[in-house]
Image (cartoon, rainbow over all chains, first blue to last red; front, side, top):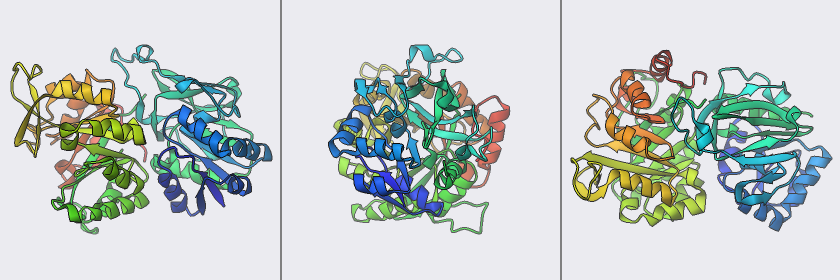
Length: 208
Length: 259
């Protein structure tokens, strides 16, 4: 069973619908026990880092995720889930789970000038991913494939070896991160059409 | 670099689309779920649904449509029309929509924007604006006024001022509809779009007036829009999404080419 972690951070139904659509069973849960038992874990999320971390701590899910990672359970981070596995977020100055060392930084509007026009924050819409390192979950993803992003902050791993893909929006940032049994994307693969579903399917079969 | 989004808009009344698709006869043209699936398959970047059901008792039909759409397409979609409270927003979002759009309810009660943003995040809250050109006046310095009820009721509110206020209240995006251009198929209102889009930090979807791919190119370049809403030009089969996107790509507008 695939456990989708519910920590009161946004729209979880879309992740569950996408998983069901590609033919896998999943369970949306707030229960640390279920998460530790799960065959794989999806850690989604929309919202702010501060309230997300507060909710994870209150429910004890913070240590459940860390334990599952140590046990080798395949974990997929999506959007806010990906930011929360980093060391620290500039959003609400929040200490995070620290599975990936590094910071979550804010896009700075003034730095983001492109073609003379100001870039808008949040980074919302479809953008491409340049793959830096091959990974089983990225199998079959092409150069023209684009993914749906909605975020005002981005992950910046300290170890560039963990950056699997980058995206450009005024600056280049890590949009795909991989480390051991963890695979994480800044974009919403559940809302990225067929390439997103393909990645999700790859994750559901991945044996790290 | 971010792609410009091309967004088909479907009007839904009591669970049925009000404009059919003429170029496909193997699908139920009245079914919003089938139409959404067709546009998803053919390269739409997002889909907008407007519930134009008149009676409030029949509004729950839309929730069922939203649920079925969410099971069928895996791109973002928003739902507007008849959203009057945070509770209405919650119903639509829990049914699987990515975003909700508020229009007249927000004009009458701007708090709904901040309450919605607080409850679900700004990225979920789209402000729909219906705007008419009225010329510059003391209370309308931009020359563009907010109207509601399909353009029949003038609100005495300046469109630019309202856009900035809505952003401050927490709207994550603006869907800007020109009542003057709407239905003309002679092109978007470029001056209005460029004025609003150049003055806010959130993305702006241009709406009203699309008739040819060139109109989209104009509004996405000169009009500074981040996305373009289209309706009859694809519903009636004059163009496909693929044709529109090829034209835009060949004109130097970055669009998503693989789906």
